[in-house]
Length: 393
Image (cartoon, rainbow, N blue to C red):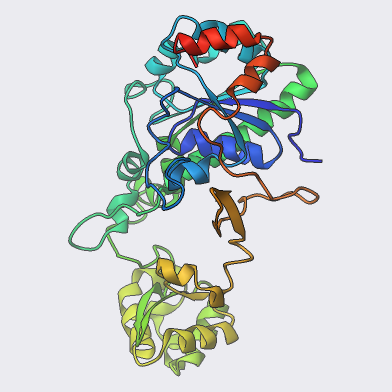
């Protein structure tokens, strides 16, 4: 049995932080109802995909797998009646919007708890529910920028944001963890509650080690490209046919690495005596390492490092990720049907429990489950038709 079987989630999320939280709950067996306007939410058709244009874009298909689709226009007067009925039959509400928007839509914890005292409400905001920035909107890059992560991630010319939305996805995972904990508490106490996450909280946690470095006066961190802050050689290195990432951490690994490249003399150099010193002299070690890699292929470099038990990987472009010879497709990226007969490699859930299936259904078409869900909520066929005629669903 799936661990969250019997739990119903109302997902009012958009883009990543809310929807991916709800998708992870669906992976664990919860019934998740994605609620969006009859015309479709703004995130449904971003990054359109060939053959799937009428279902949704790449972001939607990834972050809304395993859900059912219910249309509801919260601006319509009749929507309040429907919302109350759905909340009464649900266990969790997920929403990622600024606090004023949550209150305006009736999705804040105080309003929802008045309807159902044991409800669990997961709110993901940009800056938290309180503080001077609480009412401001924000996206993934704002967290990266304000946490210091971008400053230390760029090269000497400019800061750099990571191209994938790590802060959004990290916030979604934190929210899913919080919801699971809240449901466990509710099971023993009967008490619901609010799970609050924010993009900036996530980003600051990610950047906490260099922040502590600076706050304690231990050292000042500046942009160092792809090098590690705390060990070396740990960088991206050119080969004859691409690039590899090598991460040498710990004295034993450094000793094996020095022997592999024929530079045992590095072991007696005081500048490289431990990880901290090697990190501080990382530019020198990167130069030495690239002298070794630049005349070899990526495959040869990775194979040699693998034999020496040193973490390394070729930096793959997207065609490389999808190359069956790499071993990702079919295992970590099993082929999944997304609709319209289209099947593609699709990441499995990031958390798997023993005994649970990872075969989550694909993301739903807009409004596919509206009538069925409203009938289950007690509305007649005639009432549902009236809601539709009035534009509420």
